[in-house]
Amino acid sequence: MFAVIKTGGKQYKVVENEVITVERLEGEAGASLSLDQVLMVGEGENVTIGAPTVAGATVTAEIVGQARGPKLIVFKKRRRQNSRRKNGHRQDLTVLKITSIAVA
Image (cartoon, rainbow, N blue to C red):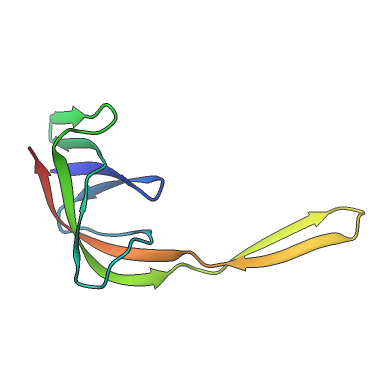
């Protein structure tokens, strides 16, 4: 069984026992959390699409750990103006292990 969930403004297709990396969610490593913004649930030919979410569907995940993404360089330059800005950015991430997908 698979599900499409929405978290952090992005959509992820998940299956049970899969490890995914999403934008930062609050919680300690080992804690369990429930993701209730399930956009689609399916298994084989049986697919349920929500409008906008599937009623009663939840995805339960366990927090494996908190991490940080790679360093990104943000460089802005306006030509012939002697104007330039250089900034760096590292996104905070949460590593999740999907434990179950439930449909009511």
